[in-house]
Image (cartoon, rainbow, N blue to C red; front, side, top):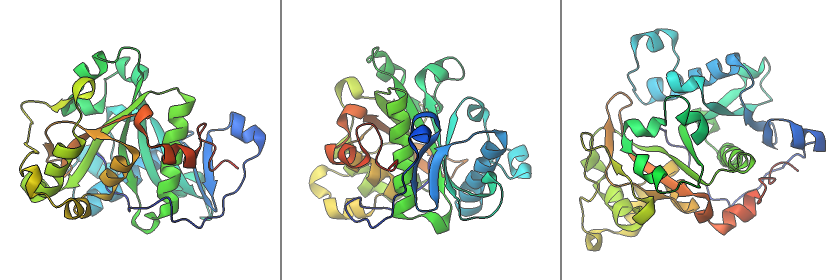
Length: 293
């Protein structure tokens, strides 16, 4: 499950980008910097714990998610996947204190080899992705999830750094495709009939890339015929994060899933690296060097 991030347009930018020393670019886990903001992987358990608290503040306090009692008591969004995932962070270095006090955004990243050696992919709890992966035996998948940013940091800079981190991570680990659950707010799919129908008709994954919601969780996305859809209104009704995935060239699985615990309606994002729009690759750099000086 992922939450919304403020929409942005990479063509409209006015940022000061700092250069990283060559030694850092080669050896460090820092993927990029814009002003005081920095994106990198979590380095220790304290930083992961702080990222889980950021997730709690967004998912529970802001969006109304209902987590297990222990998670609610600890004020942490936490599950078994956290133990095996890498945790991408955005930090504000202008905040005084320890690094864990500076975390303002996060993404959870899971590579296929790690997933298969442990609990599988989180997405498999809602969508049938086994066939999708089996049809691409030479491709390496990674899962993006648990995306959130504190309200005061939902800006172009933060979002650009999150995508810089995702892209740099994919390049570093030679990933071929990204998957993950993206969310509409609320547990009534019909409230999003326009947007869900638009995804179904215009961005539905086909052929070797097709995947569907698990039968026992399946909710119809095809609630309106294509000729009844106003594309501009459909895009306006789309959560910003899902719209961002669309701009990158993502496809979406068939059927949505209601996640009562997180108070969301989820769709499956399928994004082959080869499908990412050239203008985004040109922007972030083929080797993800855009914000590394």
